[in-house]
Image 1: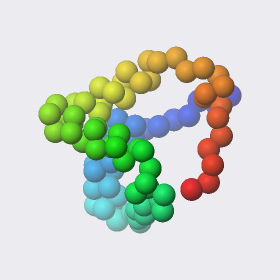
Image 2: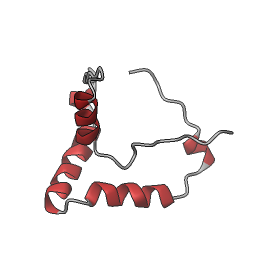
Image 3: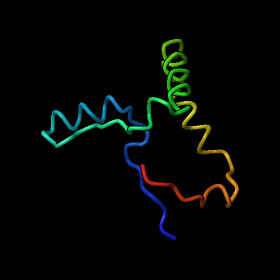
Length: 82
């Protein structure tokens, strides 16, 4: 298996959007039609609140998340269409 390369995984979404803007790259963002009722909105709000308290919260969570072991049956779950 070939390992995935995620060169911008340490960059914040705002930084990626600014990079695309200044480089003149096409960028569009559309919200999933199911997003307003999704539970992930609550998690996003929690992360924003934590980030307002401590600026490095999201980066720290990302670093610790990569150290977690994930069971094979969870890691191979297929995603449905949005």
